[in-house]
Amino acid sequence: MSACSTTRPEFACRTALAHVPGAPEDGYASVCRVRGLTWSPPRLGPVHYERRISLHAVVTRWGGLPWQEPWVILMDDQGRFLEWAAELDVPRVRARDGLYQIPEAADAAQRAQWMERAREHLGRLLDERTAEWGATVASQREDELARLGAFFSTRIEEEEERLRRRTGHEDTELEQGDAVSLKLEWERRAAEVGQRWALRTEIRVWGVVEWSWPVATLEQELRTGAVHVRLAGAVDVARGEPAPPHCPSCGRVAELLVRARGSIGCEHCA
Ligand SMILES: [Zn+2]
Image 1 (cartoon, rainbow, N blue to C red):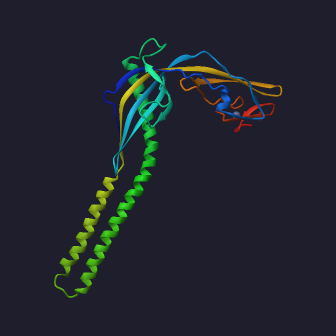
Image 2 (cartoon, helix red, strand yellow):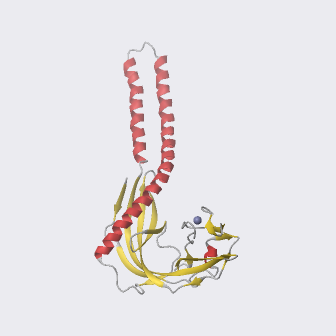
Image 3 (cartoon, rainbow, N blue to C red):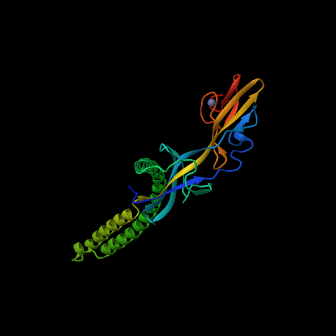
């Protein structure tokens, strides 16, 4: 079970400062390995600023020991998910107040739309984490139930043993009643343990930041003999990090590029 509360989060406008250099000197070589190919020097295009949105939340998990984690998610201005971290702020970015090169801040309707998309992303992330937490909590709950079981079964055995030694006693029914009430007590305590470890999480969004984020295009050629292939993609200039390039043959994100049938391909299609 999860609840998402978004009562009056703080809104702010910030600009992510451009990292210098805007891209690594070796360009895509920093994020994509090659075999039998040579990179030419990279060319970084002019920096422009895109709107991005970050949501800052606290996730509280109830179940056993209460526990809290800060979460931040980053989206583009269409509400598409970019990244998340278990941190208070977007990691590895220097910022200053205000929106640079973006004329005005979004209106209330636009913000409400972002909130809705962000809630979907948070819900999905939370479901993934809840599955992990569920497994941890289940083993702790089973341990406690096992200790409880060992305690009560010993007590019940002792009671039954006492009863056998007193055969012929008038109050047998009453004595059996003690074992029955022990069993009932055991059930009651086990139900309590189950409740105490029941997993319940809650998300509270406390901040929303509208960002002006520097990005640029990075172009770089790959060569092998007479084959020249030009790769182009986006660079996160705030971190000076290019996204891994797309494979020129199949279009998938590539971490390794090799020669493939007179052209260039990735580990999936070569
Ligand atoms: Zn490929």
